[in-house]
Every structure is written in structure tokens, then in C-alpha cells.
Image 1: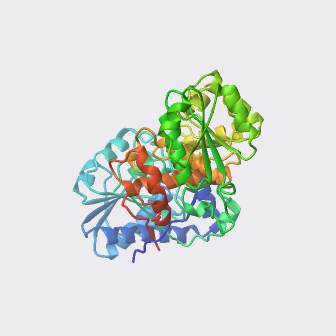
Image 2: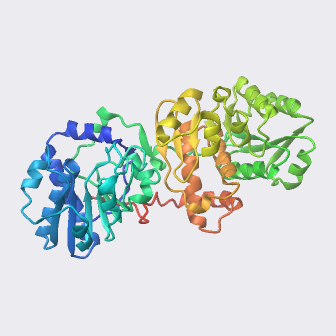
Image 3: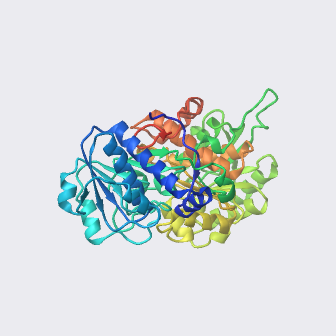
Length: 489
């Protein structure tokens, strides 16, 4: 029986998962449970046919031998192709397999109606290449991956040489970062998380610092009967003169995300455009130049949260405004122009609350993130003391203390101009309402993704603020590529 329920938020790296196995002990029993879970997932989703299990020498291969045995008992035509002799706990699992052994070659693969990839698990560190890569690339039948498709790094989601496309991936106990980070998330196909008897108590020793970004990680701001507009926080958005639309989008999002007051601050003469275009509920603050404007902003101690960057030029004036706000102790959400103004000078961002770079902006400030984007985001957060929200289809939110969350509910139609301004506005509003910076950034990324899902294709940035309320009230969780969260127990 396959049951559908929410997956745990903790993510374990391959080394942490190995530690969980060690702490739990009884490796043969865990291998038996894992292989049985793979077989059950296959039985629930595919019609009986000819199955070929590709077994590696380690524990991943051992899971494959067990799965083969359970599928054969269910009456399926099963064969096993061994890449190499088994070792460790896999020796006993292989010895218990009495069915046919087939050659590990293209002919055996071509005759299979379903292929189980149990060659290498999530801890593979060397590139998968050469003849083995060519054989896996030649698979035309549906492929079921044990833990991860071989060649996929469970820690980073990167491909080590080559990794095949799976229709279904069955993993165990807790997901890994590579199941959510691209391209790993796409290569896994449908993801099933199987319970195999590992006690959750091992997490108290491991103390995981990586999480799937979902509402279990935070508590939403909740106004009560005594709340008023000032108690719900004041967001000030410094607007650039050339692209006032960016600040207007951020302001609309901040208001919809619950900020009690939102002020658009802009130097003359651009403030005239803001007066014409701003919604009635948004305040407009104007002054003759950036210096007087900052003085006016800082004169009101209730303006604790400032969003700096949307539509602003990446120049010395913007950099100076950032320095003044940070020196005054304001909680700064730095976006767009404020980030690029600090290209090659990450120290200029030290003390900000939240940074929201996309990949190009991140590279300008901190250097290329490389294949291990989790490590790069963590390093940037530690360097600046700010929460770093590295935007993308798999946005990464990293805190200075090492916590990191991976957002995986963003649909592709969010890739359109202005959505970054909306995201920054949401984050600023949540920060103004008292959420800690890490939780505010996590909630903002998830909330925008949930709203975008409800809107659907054809989305433009202006649609997002109006969809926030319904998305929060009717949240449905974070779907896997199959469309539903899956847990097999």
C-alpha cells in the first residue's frame, strides 16, 4: 500500500546518511527493508514485465539484489546484471538471489521492459564515464533509480560525468539535497521516500543543517485584536529614478504580505512618477537628493526595515545609501542595484539582513558558485553575516549559522521580469512583522512559489501580490515532479 503524506523537512548529505546507517546498526536488516521498498514502489506503479536490475558492488547494489528477489516472488521475470562482485552487506544480499544472472551489456539492457539502476548511490565522487556511461545512456525502457540515478551527486544535485533520466527514484529515511537541487531534481523523476526502520532519534546526533523549504520551518506572523498598522511593521523602499516600476511592484507585494505601512522613498524629480503610479494605500516620501532622502528615512525610528535596490543604479550613490542604512542599524534587504553596486566588495554588504541575488549577481559579488551551490551560499552568508537567498528554479536560502533551505515549489513561469522585486517586497514585509531573517527569506520564497502555482502559465509579476492571500490560506504543500508529495510506508 502506498500512502501519501508530507515528507520530513530534514535533508541529509550522503555522509550524514552513512552516519545515520551506522548509528542505527543492523545493516543487513536496513538493506532488506530498502530493497523491499524499491520492489513495492515498482509493483504499485508498473505492470509486470521483464525487469533487469543493474547492481553495483556496494550497498546500492545490495538493495538491488533484494528488490530483484521480491519482484521475482511477485511473479515478475527478473534478471540481475552485476557490474562487479558484491562487497560488505551486499555479499549476503547477492547470495540470497537465486534467479538468473545476465551479462552487464547493451543486449541485456535492450531486452528489458524495465531497468532498475542500483549501480551507484548518492555518495559517488568520481565521474561516471566511459563504457558504463554509454550503457546507461542507451537505456530506452523506464528506469527506476535506487536512492539516486547513478552519476548524480546526492550532496549537490550535480551530474558527475553522466547520469540517466529516471522515471522513478526511491530513496530512504530522508531526502538528500541532490533530490531537490537541479539538475538532480529533474533527473529523479517521481521521488518516493521510503521508511525502512531507521529511528528518527539518530537525527539528534547528526543535527542536520539542510532542509526542504516548506511551512514547517517557520511560524507565520499572526496579528491579533490589539494589532495596528504600526505594530505590523513599516517597510521603506528606496526607489531608483529610472525604473520606478520595480519599487512599485515591491511595494504592492509588501502590502499584500502584511506590512502595516509601506513607504516609497525617492529623490525628486522621479517622485512625481511615483505619486502618479503608486496605489492609494502606499505612502510616498520625497526629497531633493539621496542625502536629504536618507535623512528623512532615518529620522523616523519606526522605519526599521528598508528594501534597497529595485530599480536603482548600481553606482556609488546606491553603495553610499547602503552604508548609511547599515551604519544606522536598519534591517536592510539588499536586491538588484544594491547588490551589483557591491560587485567584488562583499564586505560592503556585511550587516545586511537579507541578500537576494540571482546567479549573475552572486557571481559579481562572491565569484562563481560552482557545482556546490549550497557550500557557496553558506560561505557568502558566513562572510557577510546576512541571510543569502540565491534565486533560481531551486532557490537556496543560507543563514550565517550554517542552516540552509532549498526551495522547490517554484514553477517555470516565474521566470519573468519583476518577480524578483515581488520576492524582495515579501521578504521585507515578513521581516518588518518580526520574523527572523532566515525564516522570512524562506517563507517569502515558498509563498511566491505557491502563489505562482495557483496563477499558472501566463503569469506576469503584477499577478503575484493579489494571489498571496489565497496561496497562504489554501496551501497544498510542495509537489514532487509527479505532482504530489509521496511517502511510502
